[in-house]
Length: 218
Image 1 (cartoon, helix red, strand yellow):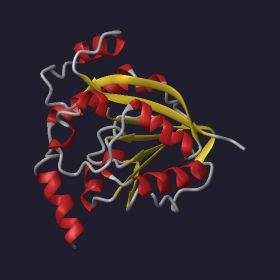
Image 2 (cartoon, one colour):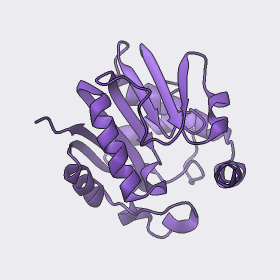
Image 3 (cartoon, helix red, strand yellow):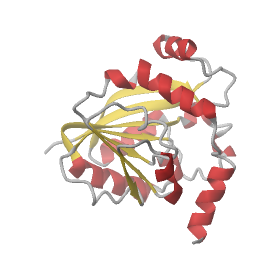
Image 4 (cartoon, one colour):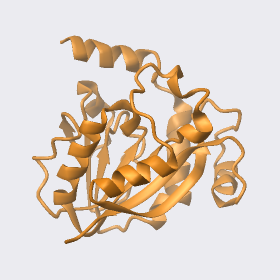
């Protein structure tokens, strides 16, 4: 009960609903993720929150998991909801997920929970499956990193790649400056501007990293 109150309080304050967030994710799907996810794929959204990523995905199967009991109410029809910790993927069949995604998740959990999630996930990914992580890069966001009182783990693009490798995942794509830190940045959430930002080699205010990794096959 206490954990539920804490999670609800976080979504009432620090992560309150914001229409700009939905606009940003719609553009991210259009200009980035739709080129990496196929219509026949099965997609898993770890720590789905308001469902801004998974609601925009076009795929054969969409699954979302979050410990927040209220998250399912924000998912579109057709998205499978699992309420529980991201380290427990027991309700998902082995080898069934082609694209796993985690946005602003692993800074909120312990390294133990992160490692347990990776251990569970490697069983659930298909032979060509991968995990994509989007989250703050401490190297560029150190001033604001702990403004979020739920941040308990610290990663840069270097340390998170080392952590992934130590837990059986090989990084195959690393973008140290992928996006601004939050939708509250000074850059307006306009579709054309987001498209230009993603295409540009210059990333003003870029403080979120993107890392894609595949499980190391024995």
